[in-house]
Image (cartoon, rainbow, N blue to C red; front, side, top):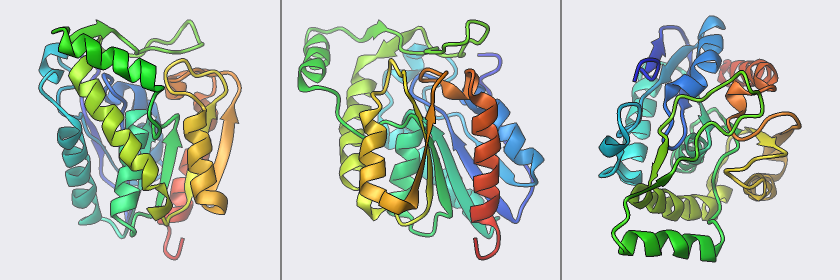
Length: 248
């Protein structure tokens, strides 16, 4: 898909991994990634497996594919940089938390409307029933944006089995949140039609003073493309520069 390409920029000694959301691609994070690169950071914004091409390519992928790609990109950055932060939107935020739980040396996390809690049991059961009935796709969840001038480049369908894999993984990531040792900058949209704000509540509760929470009053789920995008870019850049600095 034109515009869905991965993004990378040289720099250092600080590095930052930028992770997109489920059925999305680096397009939703491109301006944020470019802003971080402009601040002198080494940036990697990979295209996760199954994303950015066609939804059929995503059908066989699972959490292990996305988390494996995210961890490989993180380790590559860590091999070139003194300190590395991770930034993620939605599922990218889930992956960011997962990396923070597995790698205590992560310098900091920037989370934008991350998923770390199971959806209601009846909703999850409904998805499982569709899969058992042989259905592979449902309507898409992308482009939840308040700004009518902005559009997310994402799939127009949601693959169901990959979705269940994400939901199962998010529940485990949520249970392991206390393992995160680094500082966290959390952005929560007050009106999010994809990931409920109580996901952010869980992070803030688990991390206490390690978490700085910023409420976004004008943006929906894909806040990196929405009315609050400039504030996200400004605060994220300040945070990442601080935590990746020597002794940050």
